[in-house]
Image (cartoon, rainbow, N blue to C red; front, side, top):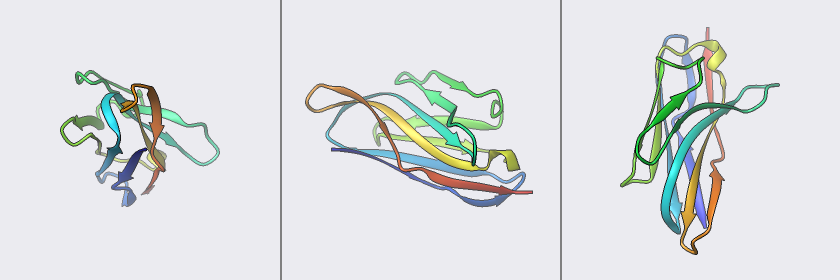
Length: 120
């Protein structure tokens, strides 16, 4: 089995920073793209940032310049550094990873989500 476990969410004030982490564990053969999504109350889940296995990144326009995605391949972990947080960044943040598991199949796995609340 493969698990993705997020951590680092919490309650902060506008302008503050947070760093989210998401660690993959289990019967992993290789990890391709990794990403962060978020879902605010009453809204659809949206892509925040994504990073490929060779380090190419892309960001939602709303977070470009404020958020940075990175990964540590040795630790099977993806990070999201969030700076200059705004109240509109309040959401549950989910990581996902495209993982090839030990039996050779490739699947998209999701974490359980971590809540980020930004007060004004």
